[in-house]
Amino acid sequence: MRKWIEPVTDRSLLDIKVRAPKAFLHADDLNRIESNIAYLSERINRLGYNIEAVLPTDWRKCAVPRVADVERICDNILKIINAYRKPDGYTDLSDIPQKALHITDVNDLERNLLLLLELLESGLSHGFLTRFTHGELKQYTHAQIRTGGVTSPAS
Image (cartoon, rainbow, N blue to C red; front, side, top):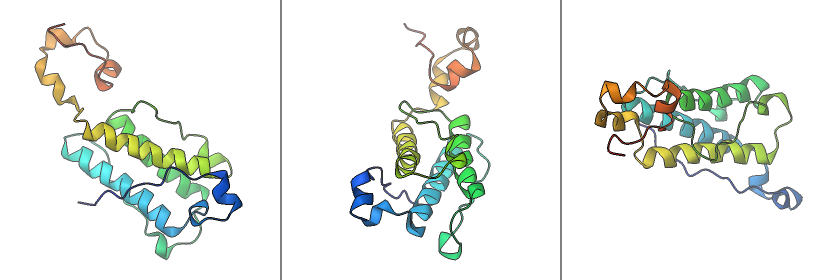
């Protein structure tokens, strides 16, 4: 299993102004993002969720990312969210591939991965449903169940 690599979420306009290393998108950044997506996918699949395999690109062997690469990265994050859960504070990434990539977009992308990890680390999974009978769950929609919007049978 892959290892989690701490994301960079604090890029700023000052970084661009002073030409700080984190103001530029390097192969290491892309590899970290892709590896963290694969890590989350593997870990969530081990919990019994069904996320199709996410195969990261090795950016040391590749050129500058194309629009299709950015779309694939954003789609892979969306696959995880659709199979697992959208964390509070999640930033929509759907418009990123259609525009010039900005450091705030990369911050949002990596912050979303961090939010997913925090959600996973909190232990929230659909395993909480074992406390409910079928009759108790009948009143909820699939979306409510997926997002944890189910109240305890004792409440």
